[in-house]
Image (cartoon, rainbow, N blue to C red; front, side):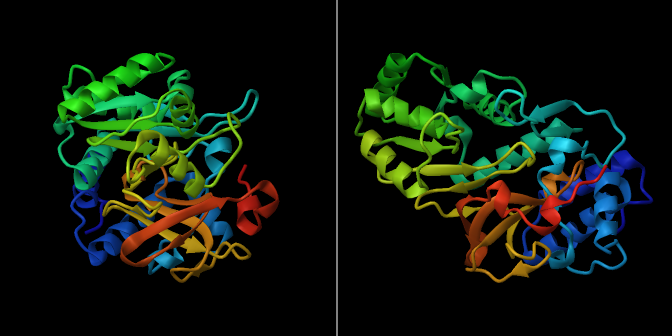
Length: 339
């Protein structure tokens, strides 16, 4: 069923319902192609990019043929697929003077539904948790989509001790120990450097706490591998596994790893790998390449994004992130820009 002849508000409701009810690969493929056709027609930046590659809604017949927009376009262009006014603009972090990505979000209910349904899928009912957040680099600036999500999870947990922590490390330590002893399920979500700083001051042997890192050294510490990071965090918190969240400003969905650095996406999100020498070529699973993300929750902006992450896709839509391109590694279409 095509949405192009519906009133636009009805079309958005139709797409939102379809996206969050995907239950099979066939559902995903059909919905992704429908979203591509809509975005090709309504997102002028994306349309020009597709046209440069000789692709259009008439020629693309499979998701592997869909062009993936280089993520840096969110820094230099307004990426929107609707004329409706945005509710919020999420922005990425960056060093002083650097250009940050901006994600114009027309409908916050889509973002909220995405992260709430994904959390329920991987972790269950949010009201069972006390949510503690150690996200200083995000909390200290405006426009963070991560802060928006975590603040909402804190409120929805309805636990009196859920909340953000900045420099009050002693209070966080006392709260963790108290809740863990009481048998309360705790989600401690933190940026990597802040979690490392915290366990330099305190060590734990936690039994009822899930520790989730969101990545992000961002010049605050020497970069280390995820294996090294998780080893240090497991020792410091006394837990058997470290969980991870894979998300970014340019996406409205998150993937989660429940341990070992292997991520799983929700049903409306898929990861493909591209050839690092030919970014238009999708390569088979288990081979290392650039990560392309299909995030169907992004239907108001662009759902098909070529990230600057390197990784591998495994069976059952699992994937791992192995690192990032540096500027000298980005070739081909990743160097293109649209004025």
